Length: 159
Length: 159
Length: 159
Length: 159
Picture 1 (cartoon, each protein chain N blue to C red):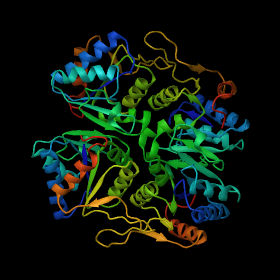
Picture 2: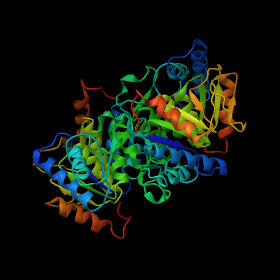
Picture 3: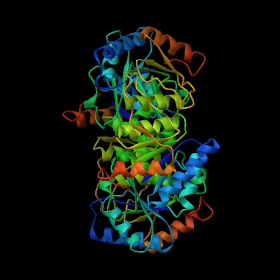
Picture 4: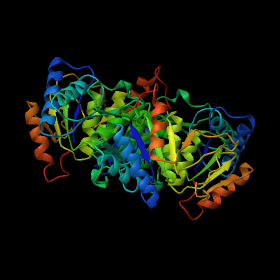
């Protein structure tokens, strides 16, 4: 289960990258997890659904109306932004596409849980001490999924 | 999306009822939602999977190892018992099979959210003032799913 | 730390009982925990504050505006009704005054956590099998706090 | 209500800075909110308590044993790391002292909620596009509390 995380109002290039990430996740037989709303989340779901994959959306609100039309299984939580912690906990690996503070919170929770995190034009983090943070920058959706697969082999398993 | 809720260590008759509920949910094309663990949850998932349905398990822990083998999509939350609120929020209707305090918490949250709740040998609630609580007792899994379908038609829709 | 739980729109007798419970909790040097809003919660806070006690309100929303004026420490959570689980987890014992489904959810979570629960005209629960549920009915606020103190001595301690 | 956030195993200089932040928060009559555990959290609580302030600890586990001895009001949540979202939601402003991924998640949630965030040797964030992130670096605890007060005046108010 691989999450694609990112914001609701994204640039065309982020939307394109998200679509490709969703498509690649589906082609390789993984399940796409996301926050279920618009922007990057919608494009990733569309990419996955158009390539035969399953998509799950963990929603902040209490009803499924806010889900984008490519979410196959919508999970309204009623938890607001705290639902971000569930996305990071439930995913085996995460691919961040662009994104702002919500995405940053998901990356932080994924790092707490020692999950692999790949960045496609998303946050690049360096601690004050100059220590690098294990967020792996990739240039393509294919590379991103390669990294996710490699990082979870022998770990807690794929989807 | 219909939830089957109930405990981990249940009687043979509860297990049988849970299996039938899962099977009936799958036969009618709905998605089964549950807490993802053993007992009633496992039997409901088994019933659904053996009849071609999809199953989602919202887990209390942070890893998917605790999921029963019939959970198709395991969602570890790391929230402990608070994950019960998500099951009640995400389901369109709930079927309670036996169960103890965890099940009671899910029923309570479903009632807060004005979701239909059916009891198959589970909690029967009456307020101190003698006011009845809208938990509908049924005798069979088929009746239970009938009630769920009738109660959500025209409402927020089925799965 | 003793929680007083109950609804927002309560009868005058429930309001009176809640005030007395808050007052008694303060007189004995305990901290009052509650959901921070109106009705029973407000009266309990008022009783505690007017008798020199501390009051904490765990709020469902993301801002402290919804707190009643007698909440000394307001904790907005942004979690909606799921904040009920925190009240049950954080309290050493709970006193339920009237209340509806929200109160029922807090009682259920307290029972999951094996916390003492006292009812002042609140839910009286019996399982289908006729097995009694350990919610202790009391007639006065003084008795209720007595039971809370007795049940937590030697247990996980008072506030 | 001002939160001091940071990790459990911190350097002596971070511990000292956390103590000073807690002391300054108390001197100005604010309430200290934190995660309730050791390291930065404990030193901030100690500083506040030794200067007559109130301290609240939002704990990840389900019992209050894990609270440091300077937490006046311990709130066990049972939510694990998701409790970080509550700290960011409940605080009017946050002061980050050192810290790792847990601290990063709290900063991210605070930014989502548009809360003022001050860094005392903590994460310095820049987006990929080079856009600065509104985390204000300060050199002393006094400056940090000054910034918190200035940023919340006319906003949602102090503690």
